[in-house]
Image (cartoon, rainbow, N blue to C red; front, side, top):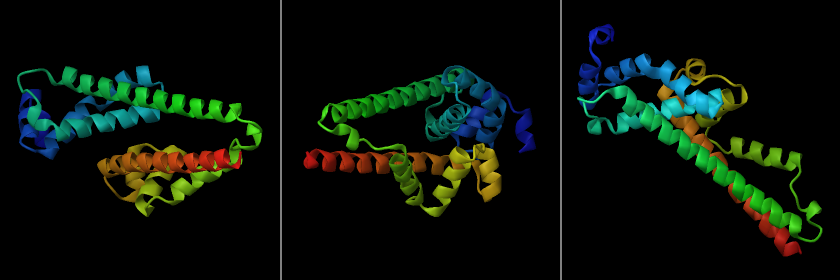
Length: 195
């Protein structure tokens, strides 16, 4: 990949459009620190910033044929990252609003204090969700989210690529979110029928 060090951004974009993964790696190397700093200013979370940066480069790869070689790459990259971060933040806020709404509706029910999940039950559901993941996905999730390793560190520990770690994290978060949503909904339905 050393030959890529001498290529201009325009040449790297041309190679990227042709499906050259080494060109993507070089662009990643050139922009990853700046992009992470840019995202971190808004995200205020190193882990979230790392997720957004990795997702941004995945989107660049997936849409490589749409990149205009004549336009500067950095604004294109930052626009993708900003939009992705804003979508994640909106989704997180939406989920918080749903949980708050569910909590308010349960609190309004008679004897609702008995129906609220306490911390140990919530923790138990979360542990079940993690255990339900396929082995590699579970290992990636534990290292990145629980142990606090970076995607790069987790990749080295598990002997897999950084992009595999990123893909497994995306799938793990989606699975865990779905598991918890279904389990919580079931508990609320059971609680409503007990009334």
